[in-house]
Image (cartoon, rainbow, N blue to C red; front, side, top):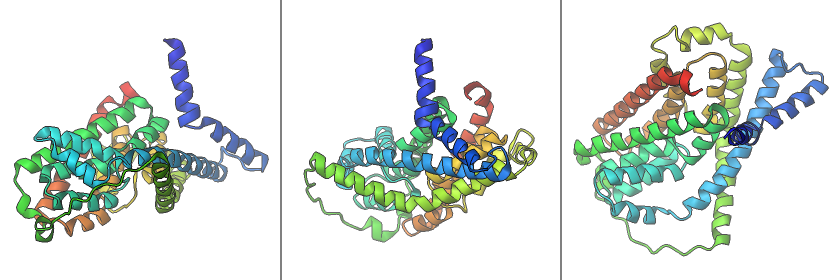
Length: 337
């Protein structure tokens, strides 16, 4: 058992966390005359290490996820979802959301397509909530920083929010709150081309290049903000605003995420820096969920597809779910970290 734990710790710290890369960059910067324990050297070390780590993990994860995703084009996904009913359909939709696009703005066109194809509204909302909030990429990246317990709980609770939110929307019978051009649309059933291994790998690599280009600016910005928080903002200030001294830290963090637009890859370095400075775990994870699920640009896009009443209910469900999850993680932080 001890050998298994040692092996897992090595995998988490050296493979997922790339501890060797951190030591290498630190040694290189010290050799160049930078003091990595100081503000400037520490900021450079944080920026280089987190940028390289996230982009490498991003490339590997997107390659794997996109290969899996090649088996689930929209038409096939629609047929799979159509076989299930009730809460089972919501669960399958939430799970399928884990192998689809990495940000809410990319998920909304698929949500529109599923709704247009006649899938139950609650099912499509379970997909819409799950897709940006939890995916296989977030599971691996969270494991690399916060450990497997936090990562698994984060994904599990995100799926609970997606299933519960979709189920509630279905029970409220809000189909008339979807814009008419979507409700009255028609989708043609086109046969899916059978892809071979080479075709799927080509598709996966194209997704790696395309997604890397799209998210790289957000990663750079996120890592830059994380480096500033990690090395320039006093720890006492972070603890006062986002630590135990502020019972409303989770609420503030959730609201603070709304104006931003990024995916999980851009928010992780900020979360990592906040946690290192003394912010509570639930506060940090609420911020991540708020950014990925409730960002203002994605809400503007969603408003084009649904009316204000449905949009308001969607935002309320996600906000309440995120805040509850945040306080839950705050309560159990010292048992799982």
